[in-house]
Length: 206
Image (cartoon, rainbow, N blue to C red):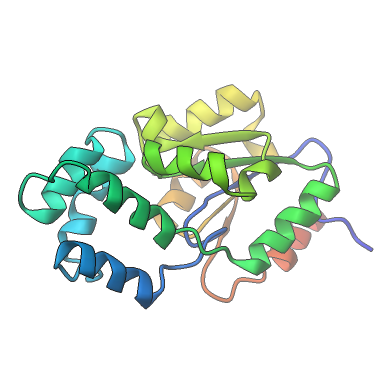
């Protein structure tokens, strides 16, 4: 059977919409019950402050107070944090299968995610998927978010790898463009992407 990985390469995965799927309607319903607000629309306050939350600029209390439009009550932001983590916890079985294959081949695996610090710590404590990775990079802990080139340069320095030896997999075209401009190999993970086939094609072209 053909291997997916090349020795010496790093495989750098995004989390949301790659390893995880989109939140379910029931997740948004639970958030609606907790806040009294429909937060699913792209115009909602859930999304408006998200970049600052992901970057660690906003504390959980500040972010959720902004979402609610009033100061969060004692314990309220912690409850909303728990619901938020649950929303994004549904795993993409196809991507997990690829991770298992790469891990079994001994590939170098790293993760780079725009994710609040609290959520990342919840997942590290309770989820299984962090165990596939030898390096984890979360925007909320680094104080910068994709597609800022600084976050990719931080990853390069930490891994000690040449950009051409990093395969970056992400669902956001702006993130892919930023990584590609620095010389990373890239795979845009859109709906229906056959990740195994894409990785085999990159391996064969190397």
